[in-house]
Image (cartoon, rainbow, N blue to C red; front, side, top):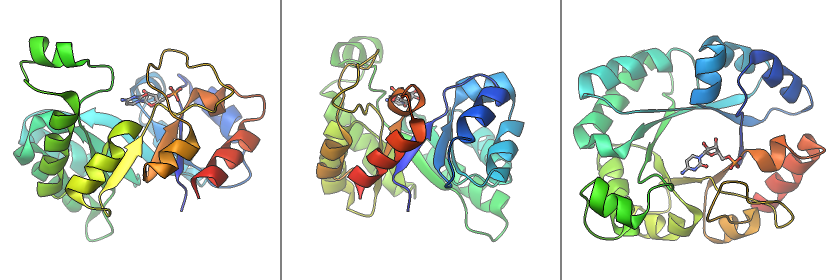
Length: 231
Ligand code: C5P
């Protein structure tokens, strides 16, 4: 199983095709808002036809009925994993699963994971702007438990929270973690970064890697090196 998800943070279909042509093997990619809004949802079909697995990172967050309808249609695209914001609540997350099951029509539904607290949100912003008291980690764990109760498969969290999430929600509950850098890389705009080795040590099930692969001199080789570190 692939444990490294490559973030396709490009804006056009052409860039994606040029980038993916460098890989001989099937890889797992993340298609987020930038690419979806730039190239349209058809990009999913293009990438799937090239034989790759897809995490469609659109972070749904709306009333349960709307999320259910949205997920039903996303499931029909045949993606492998989708996500929601845990802040939408348990009822909304249950609706997401119901929509995915309906859209999958008896076939295996896509995995669904929840974003807990965005890693860009500080404790101060969470307390003062969002009105949530306590620590970020405490809230992340509460949101992870809510996601589990709703029947989701895991969460997107920071490497530093993965252990606590597994302790609270069990080893089967997936932790998917961005903010990964090789020790030789620049941190770019990420504040708290971790190496793939450290992510593995912390029990992260899958890592999301963008620039360390996309901007490297030989993306396919860098990808293979990272994937080896995770196994
Ligand atoms: O280039 P880099 O490896 O920093 O890219 C990380 C990817 O993971 C980006 O697509 C970014 O949007 C995403 N992400 C993140 N931090 C989060 C959630 C998602 O960096 N907390």
